Image (cartoon, rainbow, N blue to C red):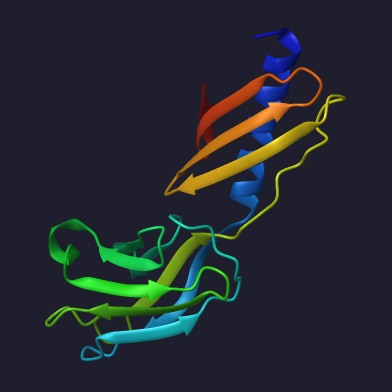
Length: 165
């Protein structure tokens, strides 16, 4: 890999990390528990949600995450297989259903943490970047780019907050 390509790769990775962190939403309101309600429906304030980035929390406990296909799955020993739901990534409309005996406690905040969809800068170097695509999963992003002019393919797997080649 040439020095220019390595520099471009490094700057693109940092640009994506910065954009993802700037577009991270925490504490998006879904509802408030009352000790008996098992179903919560809401529309997130920031639509165009990145698939595989949504986590549903009761208080500070993550109870479910999206599957990247518009569904939710419970996580951890208490919630796995016992929490389910749906999300429309474009509109931000979601529905979460807790299994019997798992109703959020009275006054417990039910919230969503997620990443809003964002674009990728294509002019971070004198050589334009063409044919860019990115896929996001949980706290990771996979990026595949073709550097204009050279045809070099740049691929990176990114963990938000740091990066690896």
